[in-house]
Length: 353
Image (cartoon, rainbow, N blue to C red; front, side, top):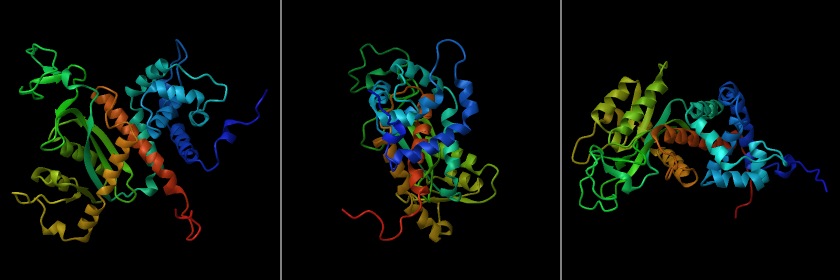
C-alpha cells in the first residue's frame, strides 16, 4: 500500500511551528558558511548542524529531558520529522551519535551567532533605548557529595557534611569544577550553581543579550556592565537600564553613567542611603522602567519551566553558557510569530471561554 500524503500536508496550516520554522530557516541560511565548516568531510557521515539545531529547538520547546527521548520522538512524531527536515522514510540517527555531534556545536560560537541572527530578525520589534537587566540561579548537574576539600583532607565519601565549614575557597566539586556553592537569599540552602544573566528590552520582553558566569556576589553587576558596554559600543545615544535593589551600589551606578546609561534601579534604603537621588527618580521614565521589570522575570520563568535551565544537564561553564544563550534564542524565536502577525480586528477574535 502507498500513501500520497506528504509531511507538509500532515501539519495543519495554522500550526504555531510553521512560522517558527520559516524564521529558523532564514536564520540558518545566514549561518550557512559557519555551519559548513562544522560538517565533517572525512570519516563516518556526520549529522548536518542544521538538523541538530532544529532538533535542539524542539527539545527546548517541548521540554524533552534527554537526547535519547528526543531522537525517539523524532522517529515516530511526524511533526518533529517535518520541523527537523527529515522525510517520512528517512532513517533517524542513533542517540549516541546525535549527542556526539551535538558536542561539536557546544565548543563553537554557533549559539551566539544563532542568537544574534534571531535578534536581527526581531530588530524592528525591539526597543533600542530602554532595557532591564537581572540574573537567575541555574542549578548545576553536580551533587553536594562531590563538593570535596581541595587538599584532599576529607576522610569520608562526602555524604555527611553537617557541621563542616565549606566554602568555594577551600572546596570544589569533583564532578563539575566550574560550579560554585551559592544560595539564592538569606535563609535558603546553598547549592552548586551558575548564574545566568539577561538584558531584556522593555517593549516586548525580547532578550537582547545573555551570558553565564560563575556564581558569586559580584557576578550580576559585573555581567550587567559587560553586556551594557557591548550594547553601547559605537553608540552615542543614551539608554536606560532597569534593575532591582541589588544593583544599587556606588561603583555600579557610577560605571553605568560613564557608559552613557541612565540607571533606573530600585532604591535600596534599608539601613543605608540609596545611590540614586531625585535627579533620577523624579522623572516619569524611572517609574515606567520599574513597571516593566516583570518582563525579565517572565522570560526567566519560561527558560526554567519550559526550557532546560532549572537544572542543566551539562557540565562546565562554556557548555552551560552555550545552552543558556541558545535557550534565550529559542525564547525569542517562539515569541516572534505573534509579534509579526497582523493584529486581529476588533470583534473578530476567538470567543471568550
